[in-house]
Image (cartoon, rainbow, N blue to C red; front, side, top):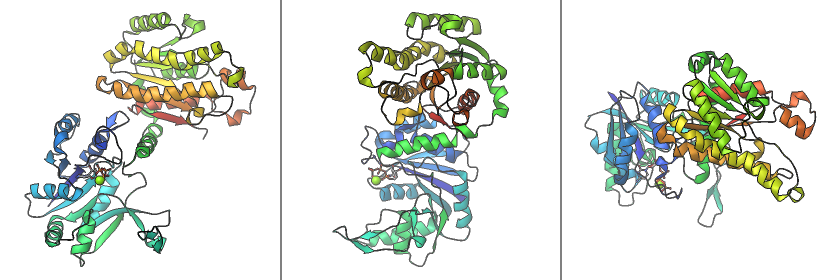
Length: 453
Ligand code: CTP
Ligand code: MG
C-alpha cells in the first residue's frame, strides 16, 4: 500500500493580508512551501506527493519544484474554494483502491521525519490519526456573548496540527456521508471522520512545538526564529575544513575584536583571507571609492570573493539631545549607510561566486533604550537590510546573514563602557565560531543570536 502525502496549498492567506498567498512568502530566502516540500521529499517512506494549489499559482509552484532535488514523484492538482474542496480534489485524483493518505498544511514548514514516522506507525493500528500537542494554556469554551460555557480539563486537551492521516477508504467513506448532510460544516478532515464515522477511533500522535501554522504576520517572525534554532547552532565545526579550504574571504574591520577573530579562525580553517581596516589597508568603509578599491584588490589577490564579512562599525552611546547633527549623521553613516554601500558594491563579486555577505548587529536592535537611540536604530536597520537583501538576491544565489552577538569583550566595547567583569562578556573567538557555523549552515536572511553559554 502506498503512502501518499497531500500538501494543502489551495488557500489565499486572507488573514496574513500579504499581496501573495502566504505559502509563497519567504523564510530564510525560500518560499514557505519550498521548505515544506524539501522536508517531505527527503522522507523515503513517502511514495508520492500531491500538492493542491490554487489555479493562479500553479506556474509558480512548478518553478519551485524545479529547485527541489528528490526522487519522490510530485504532482500539482488544482485546489478548491474551501480546504474541504481542496482535500476532495486530491482524493479524486488518487486511483489507488487503498492507500495511506497524510494531509498536511503547506504553511507548516517545520514538519519533520519524526512526526511522519509516528503517523505511519499509528496507521498500522488505526484508520485515522491526528497530530496534536499538549496545551500550556487552559482552553475555555465560550457562547455567542463571549461568556464561558465549558471548561474542559486541560490535561485532556490537545492543540491540533497536521498531518491528519487516514486509510484512504475510511476518509472517502466519511466524505460520502458528509455530502448527504445538508448542514455539513466541518473544516477539518479528522472532524469529518469524527462526525460521520463515530465508530472509527482517531488516534492522536504527538506533533511538535515547532510545527506551527503560519497564519498571521507575527508567525513569520516565529518561523524565522525556529528556522534559526534548527540550523546554525547545530552545525559541527569538525567538517569546517572541507567547507573553508580555499574559500576567498574579505573581512572589513579585521584588525581587532570580532573581525580579527574571524580572520584568525577562517585562516586556520584553510580559507584565503584578506583583512581590511583603516590601519592595515587604509580602508574607510564610509568611502565608496575606498570600498571599491579594497574589493577590487581582494578580488585580484584571491581570484574572486566568496564571502564578505563586515565587522567594522562604531559603538557610541549618548542621549540624543547631547549629540550634534554631525554626530548623528556620522553614526548612521558608519553603522547603516556603510553596510548598504558595501553590500551594493560587493554585489557583482558575490553574484559571480554565488557568495555570501555577513553583517553584524547588536542585541539592542530588538528594542530601543535610552542612550542608544541612533546606534540601535542603525543596527535595527542592518537587520532589516539583511532580510531585504536575502530576498532581493535569492535568485542570484547570494546569501545574506547577520550575526547578533550579545555583549562581546572587544576594544570597541571597553572604550565605550570601561572594564567589565569578563565572565559577563562573550569572547570574540566564540562569535567568530558562530560566524563560521552560519556560513556552513547554508542559510540566508537569518539573524543569528550568539549568547553567553
Ligand atoms: N487551503 C487549501 N484550500 C483552500 C483553503 C486552504 O488547500 N481552499 C490550505 C491552505 O493553503 C493552507 C492550509 O489549507 O496551507 C491551512 O489553511 P489556512 O491557514 O486557513 O490558510 P488560508 O486559507 O490560505 O488562510 P486564510 O484562512 O487566512 O485565508
Ligand atoms: Mg483558511
